[in-house]
Amino acid sequence: MTARGVGERGAALVLALVLVTAVVLIGVAAFEMGDETFRADGAAQSARAEAYAAGGALDVLVNAMRNDPSWGRDGTPCAGLSLAVDDGALVEASCTPLSGSGALLAGGAGARADRVVELVATIAGRRVARERVDFVDAAGSAPGAVVRVRDWTVSA
Image 1 (cartoon, helix red, strand yellow):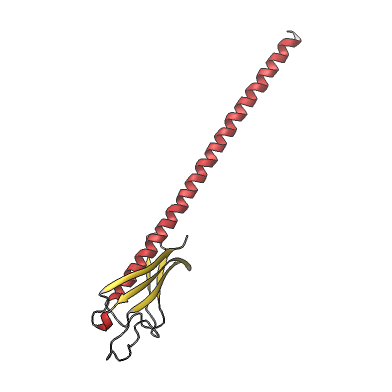
Image 2: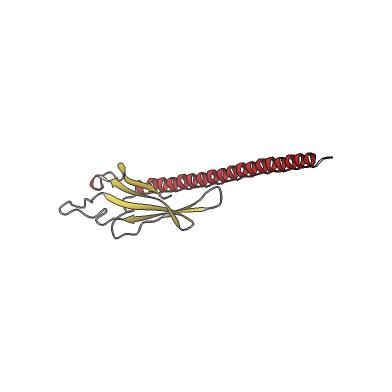
């Protein structure tokens, strides 16, 4: 064997090691990207599920308040509600009447202003959704005849 033959075999070995290392590094990088994508997708799915659960709880509360003109009057506490979702979390919806909500109208012979409330849904103490709702009660003659959602936001 000549010195030249040994050098060429050593170079081939180094080239093979570099090629194997490059393939392994590319594989590890691809695996890390895939893992990160799955985690991000899981987080987005969880956020969507929380938004849907919060929105559903607020809808249930609006429907409960709709025909009862005493709910949502200024100076009167609103009853909230708690709902369990599939993953065991608890969604809590609360109601806060705004100033003048459902107040007696001057000279209205018992007629009342429309109820305006702010509803908030929380999951594990974290605010997930909020909406401001007007209950158009036709001065008390038709409670909840029309419901207007003025503002609806979902926290990210």
